[in-house]
Length: 220
Image (cartoon, rainbow, N blue to C red; front, side, top):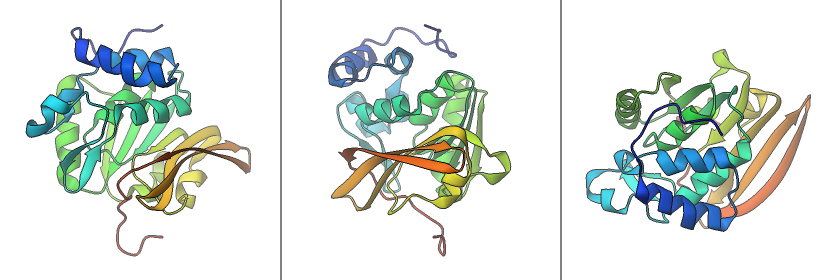
């Protein structure tokens, strides 16, 4: 098992979170478990909620957005099957926590966030923590990042009514997209799409609940 890229002190709260919320529910990727047992999740949570940072639920981070439930972060990351050499696209930087997980597990991360204040805060924190393999863009993540495509992995951290064609078009051969799909928060499904040449293989997973994917006016 490879060591994490950024050295962190022991984190008993994160270790307990991983043991009780991830491993106990079937997350089995040792790379994912190791990274999430080290990351200081509390650093990505706004002041008043820091005491709840390792709880089994999402938390607000401002502007109507959330940091995802730890289990969901682990599950979505495990679905990508990252081995270390991939170029990953993240749609919805948010707090930057999922970005840090991806930065530990992939070679390069390209992350897009529509809300400038969230992107500024997340990029400053990730830079302070020492991540140098992340590139940032403010804009509509549903359009992807065409100039840097193709991507081996695409993770969408908000729910879309459908799967944006721009994102599947930017998948490399054998690349994987993980995205919550559903028109309302009451009914969403975690969907995994893998590109096999010109063909896309879709697999529907568990039910989930994410904030809506915010798009620029006029976007499909």
